Image (cartoon, rainbow, N blue to C red; front, side, top):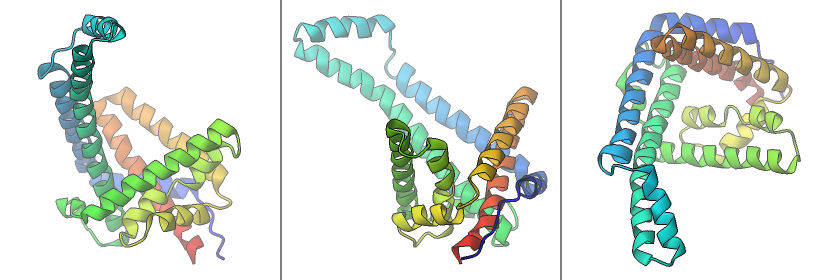
Amino acid sequence: MANFSLDISGAISTGWEYAKKHGILIAVIYLVSSLISGGLQNVYSTHLYPIDPNIFHELGQRIAQGDAEALQQAAETYGYIEIGTLIGAIIGLIINVGLYNLTLGIASGRFTEVCLKAFQLPFTVYLKVVAVQIITSILIFISALFCIIPAFYVGSRLTFATIYMVDHPDADILEAIKASWKMTEGNVLALIGISLLLIGIGLIGLLCCCVGYYFALAISLFAMTAAYYQLKGNLV
């Protein structure tokens, strides 16, 4: 097996170079999706069903007294909130998967510019990404809950499962998880290091202004894509 190590400075430098060329448009995509997602959540949770905090207290008392109508009303109220949250999650999923495909394509030469074509992936890919994220989240949660393996270790080893799934749309879910585990072997500390640095870049962007934060997300996106390509050789 090959033994490629993560070059943190190289990955961040590559991320910066790509962000200088394409980061503004990606930042705009992040900003617009955030506004749309936030707006829809606000519509469903507030405008369609105005919620007074006192309503929950009253419903709780009625439910405790065995009022079936109050239970149904509580379910409907909660449902409106959850619809907005669900729509926001779906938009976030589409944006993240599409942008991963875009950065992978730009890095490999498949794309030369930011384009909507990157989002035109089979529906099954989006479903598999959801499954991968659920499984990896469960594994990290279990490791944290039972202290079997440190959660930061498991999280680092599963970092590239989603990216691998996007890069290999025909792969199955377990293959993506196994691939991430294999390619990150011996690179946990480096992955923690690059994660901390990218968080720092995000904080700097947040201090600049909102657009600066979204541009920082573009840098992180390209940097993690570069890191993925650095370690992908370990799969050979």
